[in-house]
Amino acid sequence: MTGPADTAEAGVTSAPASGREESEPALRTSSLRKTYGGTVAVADVDLWVPRGAVVGMLGPNGSGKTTTIRMLLGLTEPSAGSVELLGYRMPDQSGRALPSVGALVEGPGFHPFMSGRRNLLRCAAMEPALYGSDVTTAVRQALERVGLVEAAERKYRSYSLGMKQRLGLAAALLVPRDLVVLDEPTNGLDPAGTREVRRIIAELHASGTTVVVSSHLLSEVEATCTHAAVLQAGSLIAQGELATLLESGGPNLLLRVSDNESGLETLRQSGIPARVERGELRVELSETDAPEVVAALVHAGIGVHEARRNRAGLEEIFARLTEGES
Ligand SMILES: Nc1ncnc2c1ncn2[C@@H]1O[C@H](COP(=O)(O)OP(=O)(O)OP(=O)(O)O)[C@@H](O)[C@H]1O
Image (cartoon, rainbow, N blue to C red):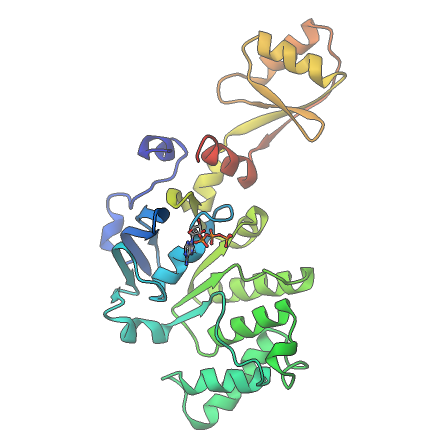
């Protein structure tokens, strides 16, 4: 397992840095744990989400994202540890925290034989902040915001997965929230739907709402989030600002050469770690510099057609962080 030293090396922390304790986070967990029989779904997670952040909760299938989110919202009881939402302890103070929290989680419990609009009206009736005519207005605005107006009168059971996701999102956005938690919100959405979700997340961010969004799509997190929390096999292996995480990736040298296999072998013999990626050689420049790499290849008679620098993307950083984890 990756320990604190490794995550520190990656430029991110697995616990709040000293000083951050003073500002109250939107969300904090302490040694949060969930086991199902012998399966450890979530292992002692210390999550820290600053107010106003858009946090991408990243991790492969089965890494514990949904279980963590369900525990945050009081939908699943932790085996150990604690959750604080907007300064309130969960689940004891859920009545004070949850009215300010919007959530999209699996199985939101919509009625299959009711229309989308009727389902939303039912949700709206349970919102303490909405009264009387506010309810119809809030429902109309939420339907418009997620692009479901045309399908609003159709029964929920006839909805596609993407439409169900949109309705769940509409329910989460019925009233202004301090915190919005979205579990895989683009699941089942087409590219246009995905762009709309990105737009909604950007709007929430602009209005100061804290957003926690789980995803296994790194590109999505890279495009929408200010922070990332990386889960692997139930453990939180990194968390922090996305920019810091990306910065930790360090520069790479990408090379288009006459023969990748010989190039790779030559670099290895020169003690320069490299790999072939998308038809090019990729060398991390943390321990070597570009002229040294190019010289080694040229000396071995390998044609260097192109050499350019770039920074590691989230995909590569994620692969490095999760390498060797089980
Ligand atoms: N109700 C349950 N009973 C038994 N095991 C469970 C239950 N819920 C989750 N698990 C197990 O806990 C682990 C974490 O699952 P979880 O659904 O939280 O992961 P995830 O990261 O959300 O995955 P995905 O991306 O596939 O949704 C998995 O091994 C899963 O099989």
